[in-house]
Image (cartoon, helix red, strand yellow):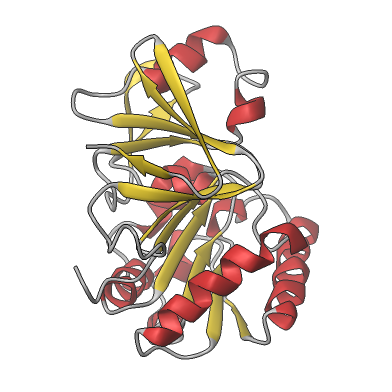
Length: 247
C-alpha cells in the first residue's frame, strides 16, 4: 500500500477557494510519490446536466488549478462512450491529482465501470496519484450506491474502491433533502459496511496525514465541518485534525 496515492471523500466544495488547501495537499502528495503537477478533473457525474452546468465545472476547476499553480486537465467525459476513449485514458496517467466531481452517483459508476478511463484512474491511484471524489464522486467509490427512487435495499454497483465504507455527502443538509424512507435506506448498509456522513466543505482522507501511514480505514478529517460515524442508533462526530478509525 506504500505506493498507493492519497484518497479523499469530500462532502461538498470541489474547486472552491475554501478547499484549495486540501486540494493542494492532495496534489503535492501525488507529486511527492513521483507524479506530475497535473490536476485531472472528471465531470462525468454531471454529464446529463447540460452545457452551461458543465461549463461551470470547467471554469471552477480552472480557477482552482490556477490557485494551485497546477496544469488543469479538464476531460470532457460526459457519458460511457466518452469513458471508453483511449485518448482520454492516456491523459490521466501520471497526474498528481484526479478529482471526480459531483452529480448523479449511479450514472457516474455505471458509466465508468469496466472502461479504459476507469482503468487509468485506478492504475494511476495505485501508482501514487491522489484521488478525490466529491458528493456523487465520494458515494460512487463504495461497493454499492443506494437506490433512492426504487426504495430498494439492492443498490447500483459502485466502483468498489472502498467496499466497506458507505458515504453520505452534504451530511449537515442531506436528511432535509430526502424523504425519511430514503434516509433510512441510506443508513441501513449491508453487514460489515461502515456508514459515514461528511459535512459540506469537509473531507475524510486516507494516506495524507503522517499519523495514519496509510493504515487501512483510518481517515484524517479536513475542513470546516465534521465527519460523522453512524453505528446503529449512535453517531460520533470528528472534526478537523482528528482521526477516524473505522475498524
